[in-house]
Image (cartoon, rainbow, N blue to C red; front, side, top):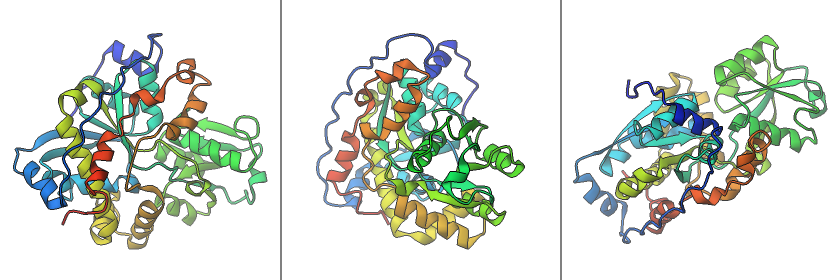
Length: 356
């Protein structure tokens, strides 16, 4: 195990935003833009000459949106930038954030709503990038639901209150002119396996699902009522998050990691064959059609080539979470955002130059 068990009451208090401490992290210190470099080869040559700086990166679920992360770690992009990156799947955000605060991991790459809750509770975090600023879901519903009006009085399964599945479900309902809780109940049942099980059992009549997982549901007779990614909502999804004190001490490492992520996005979009091989590995699937569908959806609709973290990406999460956590209603999201690392990479055109 890369992570040891963390049991620190103070950390748990921060994550649950229940300690009553003022959430007033210092403004992010400016990151000096790296000197312009003529090519990707030049940008990686000096870094590759250094011993690999170790980074443990935790992510939250198996999803095609994590293709750039897998391309970075498994495809050699991170190594070319002098980084020894270990990726670890941890579906629950609380232990992942606790490990980040305890310095057991260096990067947490998951839902912005989790980061927002922790920061509002006093955790001094910085969001460096938003890799997928959309809601990458389709709303899958039972066969008897033919139209949005049929959702009235029904239940939708979500992961937990305030998470991306919750916010995306509310966005879908609003697009239909329906209200969560009033017209349609939202039931927190857990992660993707739990939501799928609840849908199959009839405990809920719909849930959000990302490609290619939704294809398995549709084979069972469920169908998509709306592609939420097309509704125009801006989401803090797959946010690259670090501790501020770690960032201040490791700005060069952080810049190389963001450089690697932008290069990995470019390589993912340019190399479908290698990307599908990575999808097959992580999904443990040999279904070429499903993996191709997942690739196309991720690269064309979800993954950003210039993943700037923006205040508006957190707006839906703020609106939802502030109903139960008043600290979030007054929290200044801009204080946890530092877009300078993405800006530096874009200035050097790393978003358009995939590494070999």
